[in-house]
Length: 192
Figure 1 (cartoon, rainbow, N blue to C red):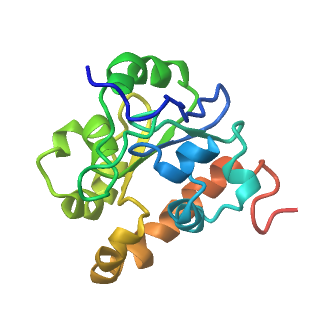
Figure 2 (spheres, rainbow, N blue to C red):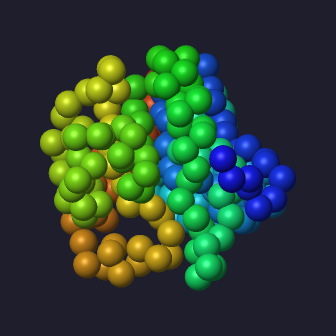
Figure 3 (spheres, one colour):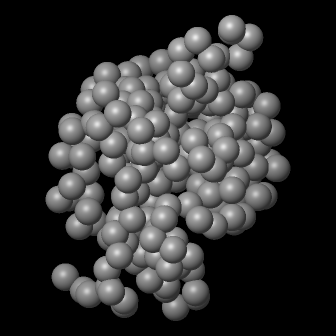
């Protein structure tokens, strides 16, 4: 097993109470430095997609964050993040997800998370998988609804522009699902 190019700094936020689990790929360099998930422009975009402010997003009672790799995997020769390493998935994912049985919504962010949570879609392109979000969400897996999302990185700006249905159709549905799980009963929009 090859060593990490730096000291390990796991970034994972399991929760015994959250109804939502964000499952992404692995921390980047900024997150490795901060020790807090999504403290980068991708996190800003993801919070916008979810319709959440920073305080709610980082409230571990409401949101669990379990990346496919817990530590920053380093950079490749081109300066891009390496793929998440498999140790965390092999040793911890099944146990963590079993321990968070109360969570009924998983957001599978990016191809690595989608391959783990939606193995039957592993041969489909990311576009085909995300475009099939309604079909995927209609079938619960182990009592959970799974919504596939692209990674919120700036590298996907062109993809987002080419796929306007993502912002027009998927995001409003996603925000409604998230809101009903993070806003206390009786405080939903329009309720007194």
